[in-house]
Length: 256
Image 1 (cartoon, helix red, strand yellow):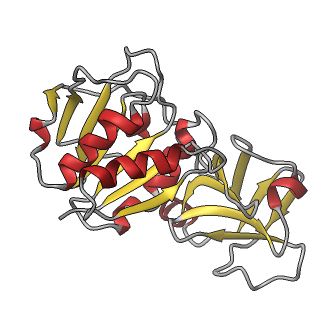
Image 2: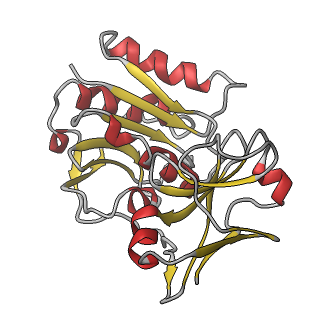
């Protein structure tokens, strides 16, 4: 029996998360459901992609990831099941999957909408049902009609020059840490042993630290996080608030 992870922009104020999980368990109560996050910013597809991209590979291959973010209720939306990096995903064809991985899906199907399809709450209906089917071993081509490609969303890349990297903030976590799209592997390759200066807002730092414990309270702390992204933190402080930065704020690294 497989495993289902569940991520949404529902929040916890309303009963939507419980309703979807109840639906899953009513179909097959033996399938474990693991919550990734239900605090994704409403309708924010890049935020959702960053969160799931950071963690989905920690789960075993064959895991089913139910993604309920920015699900439209027109009835015209294309709901899809996708096999990517030996994981299965159930979600909306809204550009999300193009931000999730640099690799191409090995299977894409448009989920079949039956006579009981709910335009109001498809997450509880056909999306939950499809996730259970895949987690129970149903072949992906049995849950829908094969399609050739997915909608793509422009993924802004880090600009790399001989002496500079220019990126931007892609996520602000619950502690106010600012997570950028600058990756450690690119930084190491471009640095070539040179000194550098990280510039964020009105502040700069000549170092990257290997943990959150090196500086005094209130000091700026650049660190490469467990996902390999450059993160700007403030020890025992909220970097987003104190630096006046947020999603899409620029981050520069100058090599000296």
